[in-house]
Image (cartoon, rainbow, N blue to C red; front, side, top):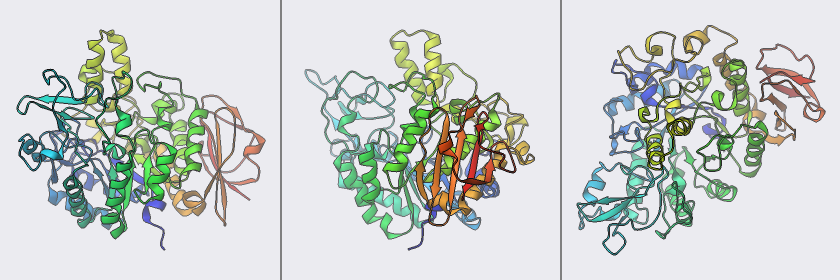
Amino acid sequence: MATPLWKNATIYQIYPRSFCDSNGDGIGDIPGIISKLDYVASLGVKIIWLSPVYQSPLDDLGYDISDYYKIHPDYGTMEDFDRLVKEADKRGLKIVMDLVVNHTSDEHHWFKESKKIDSPFRDYYYWRKGKEPNGKRPPNNWTSMFTGPAWEYDKETDEWYLHLYSKKQPDLNFHNPKVIEEVENILRFYLDKGVYGFRCDVINQIFKESLEDGKGKSQQARGIEHYLMKEGNHRILRKLYDDIFSKQECVVIGETYNVDIENGYRFLTNHEMDMFFQFEAMAVDQSPSRVFARRFHPEEMKDILYKWQQSVPWNANYLENHDQRRSITRFGDEKTYWKESGKALALFNLTLSGTPFVYQGEEIGMIDKPIGEPEDSLDVAARMVNKIMKKFHLPHFMRKKVCNRLDRDHARTPMQWNGGPNAGFSNGKDTWIKVNPRFLERTNVEKEEADETSILSFYRRLIKERENRGAIHDGKFIPIRTKGPIIAFIRENENEKYLTLINLSKKKAKIPESACMGASDLVLSTYEEKELKGLAYLRPYEGLLLKIG
């Protein structure tokens, strides 16, 4: 049986609103993506994951879908989408779409119809009477993933509906077989268009086992024990596989909040999905509540990733995406060692076992935007957190600091194509979100394409080496236990063996003897060394890919 494409490929995520604007309205669009397909192909990636382009009121910037069968006019038309799939295919690229079915928009016609008590759509959502004595209290004490109540009262029906996210994102009721049928119809529609697969948004939360009160007093995700990774969730995902995904080669990627080893292993071995994102490693610089900052320690990330590498058959590896802040800002050094840390993080991500994901701009070293006022954020989650903090009379400086850490706008600033107006993203006067002005002159595609030592050039070489060296893209993962900031592991198959060595810190670090036994040839160096000159120390953010034997 042939190895599926997704096992050998690097996947590139495009956030369409911020990638390339073709018509000067300040909003990225599908024709803009098509105009940049040659660039994407030049990276060496084989699959594009496209964040939502469906019809939407954009309360959560596309993750609130009002029609799954239409393209939002900001992005183009369905004809544009069909052309994107065809033009991508000409360049050896496949398209993966975002599947958002835990919830719809409250402007979806299913939800509008569900407000009628006798409607066949009534049971598409969770409508419930409020608690006695007057029904004006929510049916249970659950809180949203965005903080605040998870229920919204509707005067028209005198009932409440469930929303685990924004109140404009009512949750679908997967106890209803018709909802599952609707999802399967959506999947067939896009697979028939030539789409290669789906990244499934918050897919381990779709089945609510009960609506009993949640434990504790948390302002975020109280009640999660009643819907996270329940048996019904596994049953539904397996049904989608049996009915749809098993019929053709495609890829199913799960976004699985708070997934544990046991459920992650089951998702893969029970043919429920091909890979999934775990969030544990991306929380190493956050407090347990994920609201406040905590100092980043490379050894913590290393230990977490090693655990996942050895515990599940296949990993979806990433360091940033549309929901995460930029990785150099979080885990590297955006000033003194910007270039070195950008390359070191790339080497780490792309030599792990599993499928690596690269988010637009990551390959040129884009960093977080300047800190702004919480009220100015375009991120619905950051605004909701700010509102809650205001309610509790927390001071402005604290709200600003917390919301900056949570703000998803950091990852959504326009792609930086050059150092000119609007970073080459748009020739219009304004852009939907401001271009990040920080270090724009050094961080753009045009400048880095002309520099053989740039982060972009390193990504291209690294992606090529990963594809051409079997031990790196499908070999065993063998961790080497080290203390401190040194990361060391081996990738090995029956024909070859490679060693990754990285110092993920600002200080020189001694290499343990156990970490470099047998290393003979230098494949890649983040410091652009051409040959191996001994293995005693690694300079700040120095990374080496070495052949053993």
